[in-house]
Image (cartoon, rainbow, N blue to C red):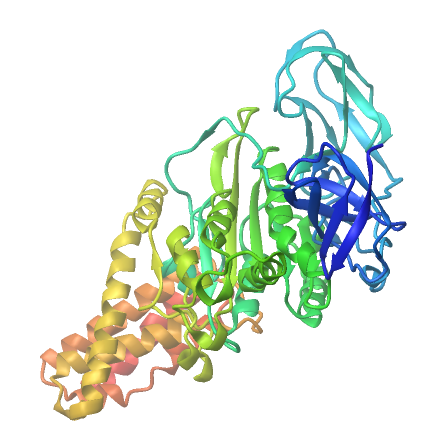
Length: 571
């Protein structure tokens, strides 16, 4: 084995000498504990590496070993329902990252393998070799690895195998249940698919106003206390993806512990089991090594691509990319890289693009349809939306859910600002709804956006001249904006009935508001004072979202008769 020697240790930065034949991005192991590190610079025979564990035990003179491969994740059965560090190594005990070298990949479990096909046929990358039947609620398909094509020499019979045992031999190459994949290299696919099918999140403000398509990208910028983590947890709990990959990069440990606890307690509506059983949690909290944080988002999207290739729809939730960018900044300062805006490295925009561009809905090498959807939280310091991470992120995402501090302080959750958010796929999503039997979705969304914008404009005007100075029709616009906000856009994550909302119930609530507002407009046009309508009791409409079940469309529609009867008494 190629062996070198440590010359200098500066935090996660380790300089190595006498290690010939190294390449950029190659993985090395350092010291007696064999700490993993990645080569980031080569100059005059001296290799600069970034270590992915605590380096307090290292000293000049310690040995270093080249592994001959880039930083890679071990992909195989048993990923779902577990917690891993930023390098996809299982965290099975207490704070093992504080003991250098304590985290190691050692999985002696066996898995039940059922073969598919017969020896003698010709197979190519992505073809199905069999399934693992006890790897969780999501079907785990064993595929021919990328780059491998040829004669299926052997296909082992049904039985239990360790993940490093061969279950087939293709063109003389053994195929095991688990394999390594470089986390910074996107996994190959056949072609990207056209069109857009929405990822249903169960959150009305997202699904009705600013939807995200499967295989698209979204960012959630917001200052401290605006509810980013809660919104991301709601998406993880209720979206209709097959696999959830939750990456906690640099967040507080108690928040990730809460996520894990809630996922374990939440029942999966698909299987009736635990939602955690189809979730992969990658934890690199604020007290863990910062350079593993830098790798964690690539690890997360690599896991999602692994399940995408099986024909599943995966969602990557990164909380938050700002903490990931801070790790880049700290490392750049240690290496002496020329700083750009606010001290971030000049390659920040390229790094963000490389992460978000790995999303997509594709035809896999095996001809299946799968997708990777990426949702990243952004934590701008002081709520400054012009800082570099937020500004660059907005260039690369298809949907933006901007969280507003004033809405959060007014206890309006989710605090998604309807004026500061956007969706670039709204037209394609509207076409999907039309094909699925809801041709009015796009018009309904456009009317909501227009009403909310007009209501905000009139609210600003009313602050100057007073509400009483506005014509009756404009006062009804203000009323419509208030009812949309309180009866539709607000949603309680703590309510059994309101934490999740089906698309049909969301449509019923929106139509209820529109119908009631139309009736109010008719009454004003008939001469009824606007004040009398504004003082009416709209609580049956506002409470409909919490007093009816998540899919109770009939219960929502019944509120229309109640409201029309109440308005009828005013005339």
